[in-house]
Amino acid sequence: MTEGTVRVRFAPSPTGYLHLGSARTALFNWLYARHTNGKLLLRIEDTDKTRSKGEFLDEILDDLKWLGIDWDEKPIFQSERTSTYKKYASQLLDKRLAYKEGEAIIFKVPKSRNIKVRDIVHGEIDFNTDEIKDQVLIKSDGFPAYNFACVVDDYEMGITHVIRGADHISNTPKQLLFYEALELNPPKFAHMPLMMGKDGAKLSKRHGAVAVVEYKKEGFLPEALSNYLLLLGWSPGKDREIISLEEVIKLFKIEDISNVQARFDIDKLRWINGECIKNKDTKVLANLLKDKVAKDINQNYLEKVVDLYKTRFHTLSELTTLTKAFFIEDFPIDVEAQKKLEKYLKDSKTKKAFAEFKTDLEKLKNFNKENIEKICRDIAKKYNIKPAAIIHPTRVAISGKIVGAGLFEMMELLGKKKVLERLEKYL
Image 1 (tube, one colour):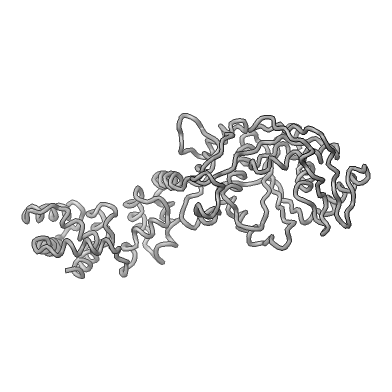
Image 2 (cartoon, rainbow, N blue to C red):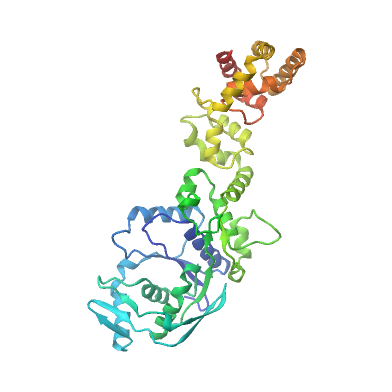
């Protein structure tokens, strides 16, 4: 290890899926490592044998890769290091700084001492050891307690900076006591403010999805989620909100992490996702959607549908809902759309205009948007009605919805045969 090389770590526990807050922690550690040409290491905190599961770990690692986060060196597993923790605990027993209680080993916390935590984000924080009870080092089951394992691992992994959530601030003085007792140099600490819900309460399931995998399934792009998580605690300045991770690597400084609690806003995330979708290559988007819309779909046709709707949806799953009528014949009709169609077709003049529109479309040789629009507007003028009186029921008849892309572009893309069959059904 080169002297002065930054080494940071992300330490997930495979007892559940990757939480948004944990993903943000991983992202900030990764950015700092890449900005400084340092190393990001993975430590799997799997000492809870009843709750730790292989499928959770697989999903966590997949989610990290999906977000664009890679790591250096082989991950270490705490469950494989029990003898190491016992060795360090024995040193403290030998120094009479710890005592045994059955099979457990307990650290004696010195009384009436002031511990100063120098935090990169929050500045200096004082703790009094009178408020800290004696700390378990090794539990009676032979596994280490969280804070002790943390210290041993961070030392042996050569961690220089611990970047984690502010909920760990109270653990830091305990860990500093272990570093001191073991005569080890502690790393530098940076505690990021917690992510809160829009209402200011700690982010939980009542605020919506809290696991990365759920956003992945919903059709959020990884670059959009990374971009948004980044803004919850750091800013590129100049009111910029859309920024690539490549750019951030150049700009990111650990000292610039905000000390203000960040509030997760799903609407803001959806907006960022929509912007990322607009800027994404149509071919790439079509490939992401291929399995979601229909089997054996023509690639060129799919790309045209995506192009038509690219600016109108915020998630990939939204697009599949909006565009069902392009891929299947038994597409659902929205309740409001059905009411609107019936309302228009109750008017005898509108119904005649609608029927004539279909008749004129049948005669049309070049079925393109310009010709379709001309027929629509000419008939509206002839019957002295607004073009909308033809446009709205036509849209419902061919797509089952009252909103969508430009009607005439939709009709051209669906093709003459499908459009006429669908209009006939409603006449």
